[in-house]
Length: 602
Image (cartoon, rainbow, N blue to C red; front, side):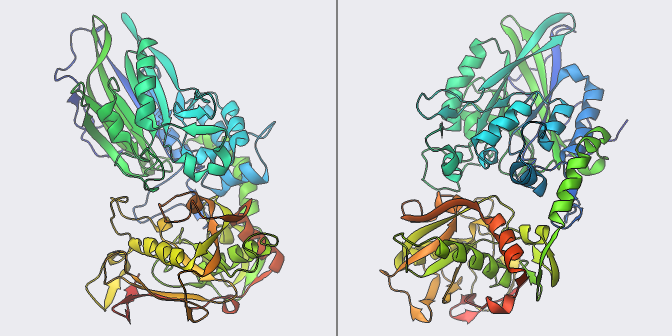
């Protein structure tokens, strides 16, 4: 038997974690009156089948030596099923499946799924025989047509109770499913499985869903659906929720519903027994939340991301006069780096993986000198200047005949990937794609000088305050905790702004509190007037409200051709053949303390 290493908890299976009685009493009246159901969970797989880094063209590795991919997770899942009995196990996923790797991108854009072309994640999940999966927000990145094709290729239901028809308000995906689990010598257990997705889809993929699908709040819709599930005969209710465990929203007050609502869900909606949590990419082996109405404990677990962990939730049930009830529950996480990949799934996707490797390793141009994004969070780099150059050129070319024609063009870019680097010499698709790991599209909006300053002030929230001039390690100044980012502001919520035909220059004084950090803001050497007008090249995530930046959602849109920024970068290199950093890179911003530049070490 495989030795399965846990993350959190004590013991391997029996007694994993700290079991907590749901009603203060344990089960134990007789063989037919008690049973255990095990819920196995993955989340945020993001198109990862193998333990492979397509951007490095090497086996995946990180500082903690995590392994990734559904092929590794599959080994853990099959081992637990063998130990517990497959019929006593349910396997769920909490969303974000079809976006995130070149493998996923290839079968969405280069060789789109449909007909004989099956999505590699559908093939893998079908082989592993999932019982259900929730929608994630990234499921909507490629539009509803591709999502519906993916849904048809699955052998398990894709659940989204709060994804509602724009006009009728009815669910457009199956809201829940009932699963009956036999009990020897006793009445079967009926498990209701509900799927919910963070309502932020309405902002982040507005172009794909507006006028078609709207999103109720996670808690609000669960209050409608969970009673329906109980009325349909569910003894217990398990929710697969693509919403984080810690309250907060990256989009501020742009929606009335919070982005991360799993804890509120457990607190406010009666009759939920367990929640498989996703979206936040956090490692939560086991958390109990008390429901405010019933006083019962609701079990939460989040299995990190990319298949690094598998959640194992044990629900110990006791038969009562009204049906089966959870008497005690516990959870733990299993670590994918302790096992080999599942050979069946690995073999199933091998040909598709090979096609993608050929694509991403294809040479499309050259670079005169290396560009690294490693220091882009705290230092002006050619890598970010390159992204801003391509975005600004594309928007400027599309302004003819619009309200933005003739206005100076600026661009914003975020340091998405610290590991990204364009080498000197030959440049491949994967080199360029590594600079932009998301599937965002390009938008052009009109901003005033005052709006630019407000935007940069918001961006500067990313930095922690320092006492004064000096040298600081990067971690001491970046990823500041804020009310909307209790776990630290993510790198993708820090934007760097630059000009196309002339430089936009500014300083960020992080020795002062948030709101007064941007100094010396100038365009082509002249201070930016509050009423000056500019066109800003911006991604659709940000323009739709992602990150809660001011002014963007109401700004006039003068360019929106739905072109993916990553593909624009690849196309630019393919067409121009050569990247020459000295031709476009310049130092236009820096971190300071009281006017003195800071020294930041990696």
